[in-house]
Image 1 (spheres, rainbow, N blue to C red):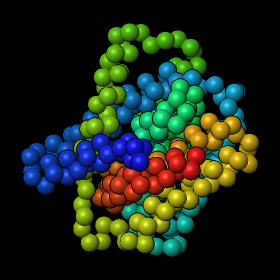
Image 2: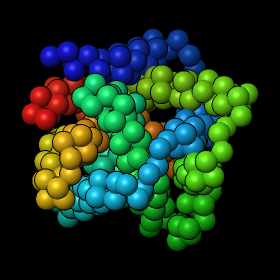
Image 3: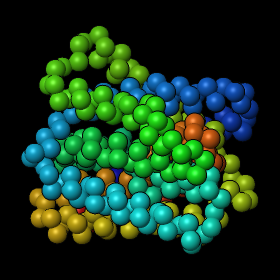
Length: 296
């Protein structure tokens, strides 16, 4: 299916990151610098730019927003079941927790555009604006829980949360971004995804004990199978239009965001299992996402 080609460039960039790291083309501290650059500069620029210019017509799509929040919260609840099921170290669980409900925005936008054109892009932008702060707050709260009781200060300082808040606030003013800052943000945002994917690949560690196979299967089953099914059921229950239903399922079915790895590493979590979930999830989504698109 032609839809499978949507994920091929992402996976090839991850593979390139693996190759560059294994060949030791760059020193270890180089990749640490790339991770910090993406986390503190490039991804915030990407988030702000996408939200500041998105058509956040919340009043016109309340049911779609409700469905998006619903399946996201369901993903969080199912992900939390990994605690009694697998008894992982807290750092591992806290880092992987986000992989059940975070989403790759670029893949979501590409898939929505293919399925529903401009209407699909507008609808998925609305979900991005609402869900990005929600998933980042949940991910940061889990990563600081148990080792730092100051969750609120950690959230306030998080550059991804700050970028989302400022982007939504700017959008509410209806003031266009001036040409020069807009162009700078565009260039920074364009670098975020490829560098993030390279950093993910460089951080892959396929070593025994990185993540138990049952836990790996659990998180992948939730993200790529259960969550889209929940989104589809909620969309039908809410009476969404065909386009809104397609967008809801696409948002639930795309693989985990590459920023999940960067967040885990920057907050002293366990980066390797998250990188494993992202890379295997991206590979699996090359098969599962086209299936969901064909069903829709």
